[in-house]
Length: 232
Image 1 (tube, rainbow, N blue to C red):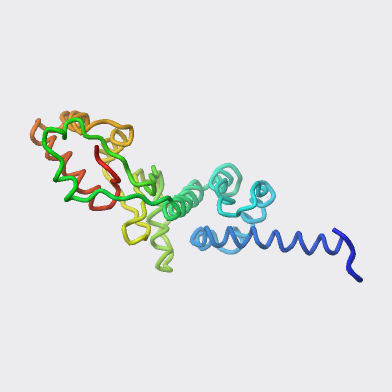
Image 2: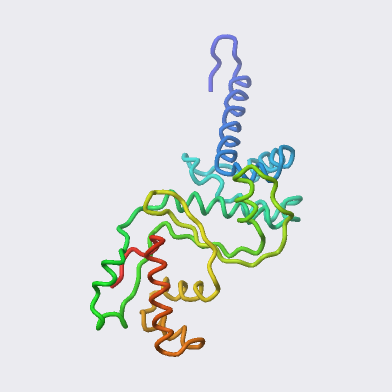
């Protein structure tokens, strides 16, 4: 940095520093707009200043700059005293990840129904790259939905739930809560288990025929959401 005219090196450096800090702040505001609404102006400003100090940007792109924000909120008071704040930030990060994920051809019901019955027992599934999962311990997603319509959220409360987040066929981000049964089946499918393995998992609660019917129903639901990329 060199002097130019009447502007000293220190002054030029301060201009750059202020502009750079403003750009980081803008990134946080853009990526976590509803978190800002939840915190209010004063706490949001405290969060921005603290995060910028503790998490300097490490790449030339600001796309992932806020990836460490949920951990910052979970480990730095006063935010860490309210775990829902970190969870709300995590949810917003997952929305961004789902939206920016690579695309892939999605499995259709027509393709699924055309698979010969003899191949179903060994059939395995590949999921769309946008699929994300949040194991929520607070009413963070409900609070986000309330903030989205510009209403005041309910007080924080402990609430265990599992949310799927993905980008649909219209290139819009969706999310939906699922049951523990569906969650366990999804984990097995993601791990590469076959259709017969999924049916076996359900046999603890259903007879053989009901288990296979229930497994098929989950597959139809996943196809309808656009979660499945291939079946083979």
